[in-house]
Image (cartoon, rainbow, N blue to C red):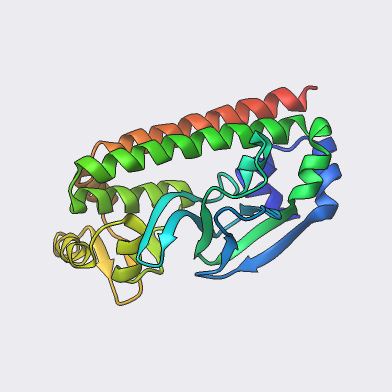
Amino acid sequence: MDAFSTNLILAGLPAVEREQIIGACELREVHLGEVIDEMEQPIRFLHFPVDAAISVTDMRDEQHIVEVSVTGKEGCTGASVVQGSDRSPCMAMIQIGGRAVRLQTAVVMDGLPLLPYLHAALKRYNLLLMHHAVVSVGCSQFHSTPQRLARWLKAHWHRTGLATFPFTTEFLAAQAGVPRAAAAEALEDFQDRGLVHKTYNTITITDHGGLARAACACLAQAMKATDDYVRALNALARHHAKT
């Protein structure tokens, strides 16, 4: 399955672990807005994005939704199962459609003693999600809407590799947890400065350096956390390849 070489967690699987789970894996198309995990509901599958992006979201009601983090090809949803909880702490919703490898949670948990790399990788990914959640909370309290949107767009590019996002202003505002009017004003300013190109339902980064300069210091923190995670994941893969 070529998707195993694209998702960073799956790419690091030792041959013996890959053979153990591959029969339970399914490569499937996922679509914008599809909810794959509900808050406080059992996690039936882990989803490893290939070229999709999955929003990990706190949803109190339809009027109060805010993104905690986003999962791209660096990770997976449902990783909290290895911490002892079989219920999702957040809602997971497809933010950018594409492909993801779906793996039954029961297969992972039943075989966990024989999956030492996957177990360690999922725990390390949980640490990254916690780090991003902390950054997101601090950013929402202390920084302006333009700074937060610039950080959000650049951080998503860093995590997913995508420069064009299929988002309306309303959708982006909801995901970033900012008022729609403030988001629209900030995006218009970004477009006037040549940082992004916006249509009704797409936002494209056109000046990566300029957008990074418009962001708050949280961007550098989030990117460093992701880079540290990737290095740790590579080290885990090398270690378990030898055992």
